[in-house]
Image (tube, rainbow, N blue to C red):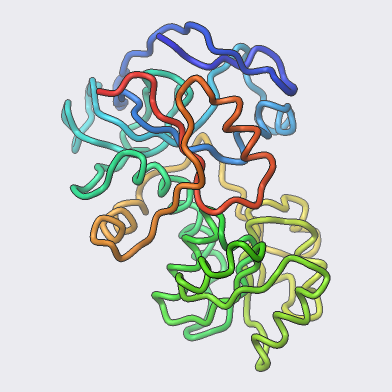
Length: 306
């Protein structure tokens, strides 16, 4: 089957080639990949930034977020049948025509959502809900979301707004109208960020959710204590007292996805695609992700649409 292979760490290290097609073992599901979601972890893996934490046997197929159609169901799997439309996290790598994964890592896509729309919600839905469960903001509190226009950030904003919180979101000026449409008060990343947050929240800030880094925790130290900040990007922030939500990408489950998928299918949760790429352009998609400051999710079309 066609697959993008990481042969060595570093820039331009992923090449399109051939890989053995996986089969579904006991407890696994095989999927024809129709849409792939790009995450910052993907280019961090390919550049070798996480090689010590998560060593990979090379060559390797990277990527986690997939949506597609079930081709095969392994022994002992319940809740899935051949032909189901599913979304979740691949065990065998997402940058391929076919993928296998544990049944607990998949959810059925409800009617009304395309594979491309559904795949935007895989990591964003799981990560946002896991981070918020760790942060546990008090009812009707004021929460700052750093990187609020990204895939995870916009999911966090929408969940918080729906729960009755006041949300202040950092983003580039081009994304401020988008944040307003989600119910957040936008502020910039610039040197005036702290002053803008203070003006938007004269009664103070109760908590913060960091999806973008850029020394955010240190910059807002006078506004909110580190112990009330959860971060998904600053893995060293635990030394500052922050909550680090560094989920193992090989162990994510789809348990929290169905409610978000259902909301999106009913039009009550907004999905945003930053840009779509054909399957052959996975390296270009990774390069765009590495540049940052995106609105929503980068999506790659699957090579073998079922």
